[in-house]
Length: 396
Image 1 (spheres, rainbow, N blue to C red):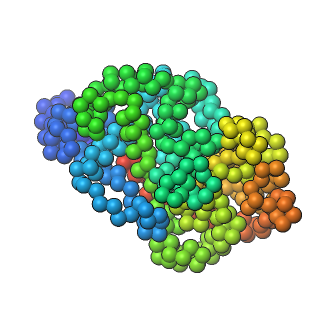
Image 2 (cartoon, rainbow, N blue to C red):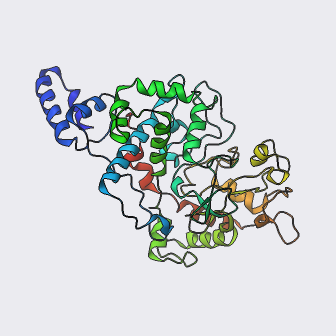
Image 3 (cartoon, rainbow, N blue to C red):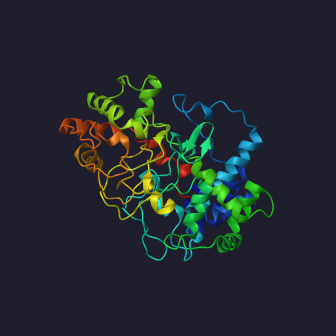
């Protein structure tokens, strides 16, 4: 930031720098007083004028998110809340020993997933499952098979075992998990109360004396739910031609072939438009015998053994390794698995069964496999992974 560079100039120019810096902060701090912005700038790299965290969903995606009329004052308050959520999301002080944050395991350049099979918590202990990507969680819906309901569509879980169905629950679980952040909610709130910049940020978002557990979770959720991915090459093609089964003019021959193969073989679970998943959970035949039973470990139901969340595929190119245990390092390995490696587990999803009831063998050719990978790479949103409003406010 320009201000930080100015402050670091030689002491010879210190008086001029202080005067210039003060004027700059006062003139740019549209949403803060000059004193508030000065205090925030001691620790945070936040803009004086709030980022816009309104969710902008293109017309080819779910219409239930379009066309709502919101009072400008509500938008301003929502942007303050999301800004607070951004700081909380990246603040390592929310962990027991101040070493990890939500952003440690959900990295912007990885599509808010983590490029490790398992993530390391505050004390070096690893998580038991791969970190799920957080991009586009506000659209975390599915048309069937879910355990909650929203506007006629079921809510897909925020956890691999389908036990968590809100971002607030997911955030609290991460904060309290002894293998992740290792804090009690009470201790976390007390620590937040002791940090000067939070006094300002919470007042802007919620009013006076509103630093509490519920508002911490609300703020983080509002930030995470604002992370939307809709500017990929796929979105560009679908915006030009609303029919997802038609060839896209901005796609290569290989990408269009991959799209056709995907729509014919994969979209029955993951969805063809990448706005909803068709199934919330499924057994995809990774193993005959599972060490981690997924949803079954929670419910105890035989039909849930080896059943896991069906994830969104947006930014899938960035978010490897793949599967609940991160066993596959590359998309090529994933495609190979679905082509000829699916196991005939008792609970195998019917979409992956052949006419004989056994695991289907798609037996893609090398050209088809390459085309599928090429298509999946069109789901990458370069804008989202570079957007400053989703990046850490704590600097490098």
